[in-house]
Length: 289
Image (cartoon, rainbow, N blue to C red; front, side):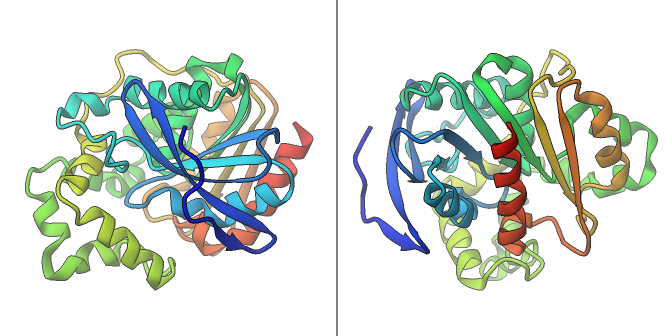
């Protein structure tokens, strides 16, 4: 694993830039905290990158944890395969385990938002022995979401975008007018400089296609089961993509210790819209488990 590159001060801690080598390629990542600190891996969503967790990584590092947030498959230039099937859930979960192995983490806490939340749920199902705890932000348990898609017209309408984005012209539409359609997705809740950074990253050749391949990849053949590891699920009431039906049903798919936190008047972009509030919930969860 490469050393730090251009550490960036953030509050009382320091953000490092890492390269994590795996059989699939090298993942770019940000990190903070002592090397022997309790390990926490944070997975970003679409259309974002590891820096969506910058506040949480810095705070966790300052509290003595070893926090690492990678740019996931397709977002890291070193792991950007062309094949759509390479973005299937088995591959994404495999990346989590491979990164933990490269970091020499036998057990770790896993945090995910949006697509990163989906990967985190599946990792907790497939590899519970590796996880000390799970924190899912925005994304409900996949079985709860599946049930809502079948029974709740509101959730079916909210999720229509997932089918629409499988169109081969989606990249062209999102990047039209200097990326204005993509910019509007953040609902003016993510800092402008951060949105500029995301647009620059996703405008790189092949980057947006790779990110959208997460939506185009084959769905898992196996069914996810109940989650046994201690779980915190954070859902926000103004999330345009994920409604209350699946959020409230998620508790029925966790058999281990479970905590549900509902954030009033907060949109989908929780880690960046209310970073202090989310970090406080996360720290409390980690300290109790």
